[in-house]
Picture 1: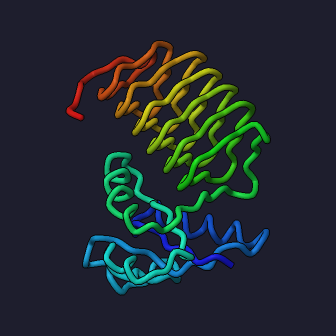
Picture 2: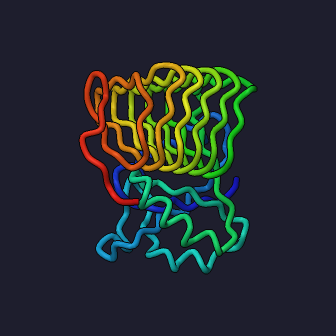
Picture 3: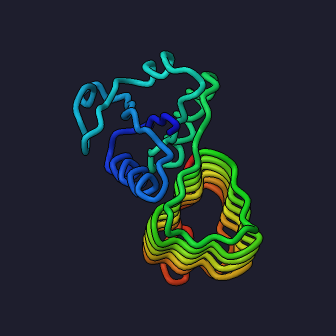
Length: 215
């Protein structure tokens, strides 16, 4: 079994601990050592039977046999933390729930978290450190760059491009051929039928930008 540490100690991190248990129930693959989190209030406590080992500095003590996964939902915060710890040279794991349906024509980078009941069809490219939560569908020829967060129940049609650090809210639908700009947030329940620019928050049916934010 390969040792692994979860970065983060919030609700998503506890879900990722369960995801690891689900993977191990099918094939023993991961030894979860615990969590690391920058909040000192959490240090030393147990969350769902696994200990918060301390802050990010605890990772300095591990050899390069220890894998990492960053379970921080906000794309900007996740990117910041991953870039901070990447200098340590520890490998990042891909965690894919055993019941995920995924063709052999899906390529994936590192550090991705793919939860239960997702379907990925063909010729899909997934970059690094993306989180795809429960019960989403991803159609043919989708490109998902890096640090994206896809919340539960999202449906992404074919030939969609998600640029870096996109966040897609629960039960959003995106029609075919759409491009979502870097850093854009799509609020829950939206229907995206037109391209969305970078660094905006969009909402509605159809989804429209309601505000823009800094990089």
